[in-house]
Image 1 (cartoon, rainbow, N blue to C red):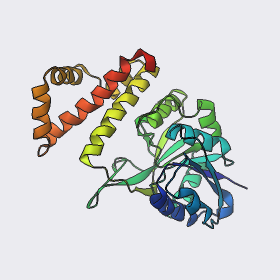
Image 2: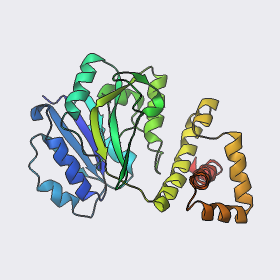
Image 3: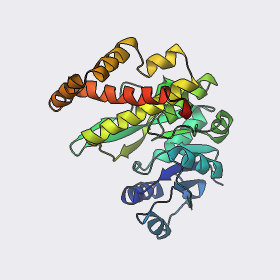
Length: 292
């Protein structure tokens, strides 16, 4: 009987996906009690051939679908899941051998709870950090803002009752935390599970990170439209000082160019540039009525 379903969406991540699947095939949890549901948004890098060549010890449900984004793929995979415990991760995050076992045991200890495992992020080839603060204690209740779906589990009926992920999020970011906020409003607690560990193998260049910040800003506007209250506004970084600095930089091209030049060797100016790109994406979507 399938008890746990690992949900993965993928697009053109064949090599990293292979590492992640191999790690999920080699688990301490009995292979007849878990499945992997893999939604492929029409990868054209050989993913399909790679997956079809595998000999998984557990049940593997692989399907290809029109590329409608990460959120749509993840929702469709959840709908196909057979297990009562849903474990959410991504194609580029190989797991430690006990990840599934730890998530399942946690749900036996604390029913009707969501659990956030710990993820080690590869920032650069020589630099890693943790997704969640190491100061948290095992099973400690943590804020809804840590609802990060690279390593997270909850009961299937809970996420279905919440309405799954909101598919209006088309760009990078916030779709997971927005769901975490809705679950928080429903009274579902989130607890820290550091013994469930995986490794995010996705270093991002400085140039790419600016693009990511711009896309995150666009997603932040969708978040705020859905929940237009002061708590969410401040959480998203939409305070008067930040918006005032953004407006000032936008009005003066020379100032933007100065910040851009200084950002090469200055963390402070780098932060200014990142926040400018974030708020640029936010204001563009918020003021575009056609995207509502």
